Amino acid sequence: MTAFKAVVSLVAFGALTAFQKSLHGTDFPPLASFLSFFMSGFLGMNLCDILLLHAFSTIGPARSLMIFSFQPIFMGILGYIVFAQSLSMNKCFAILFMIGCVFVVSYERFRKERRWEIQGPLFAFAGMLLDTVGILFTRYGFETNPQAGIFEGNFYRACGALAGFLLFSPFLKLRLWKSFQKFSHSSRFLIVGASLLGTLVAASFHVAAVSRGNLAIVAAINGTGPVFAAIVDSIAFRRWPSPFLYLAFALFAFGFYILL
Image 1 (cartoon, helix red, strand yellow):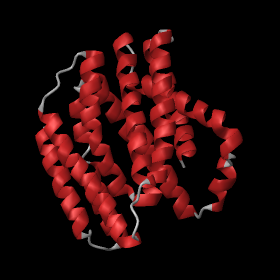
Image 2 (cartoon, rainbow, N blue to C red):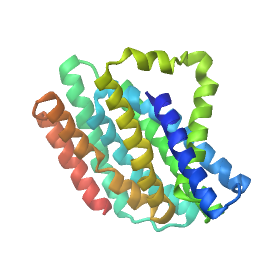
Image 3 (cartoon, rainbow, N blue to C red):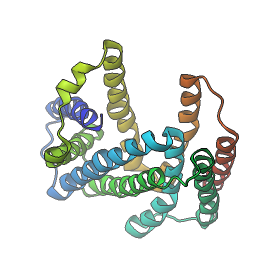
């Protein structure tokens, strides 16, 4: 799924970048900018997505995304160190509530299976760290080349993501077209639609925000994902969230409020 998203992203952003360059006649970006976008795609659109999908399959999307609520903390610290962006002390207090959120999520799993779920949160946490570093590379790419467009930056990120899958292909044994053909027509539509929404639409807005805004605030706003993921999860499976998930949401919401 992650490799398919990278292919869709490469084709879509490649076409848009070619059209944009034909209008404005821009040249190839500086090497430092290109490598920054390339590494951002390799870390954020390849390794991060692989780990995040593993976490999704283990502890679910809503709980995995809540672990991403740690990201504003790390983003604020690294943004301050790398780009001299302001760092509020409130973020240090918010981390206590984020830790409580993760503890509640893991404890719920322990009550069901009588063992602590470690693998899923570790996958999500590692993915969050890689995504954080990838965002820093994205911002650095725009800092070194302010003329770079949003579509162009995403195209180079897609190149990095696809290069990662080519690098790992001897171990992953990717069969994209054969696997795609096995799905029903409705599933194919969902896969293509999700890839376009997640890569073309969402990534364009996200990269635009990263190129201009305070990285910690952008990450905090992006942290609202668990709320929407839980709503979609409840509707899709026709079930109410558990009391533990309500408590985790409360801790997440309070920590998010402090971040803002």
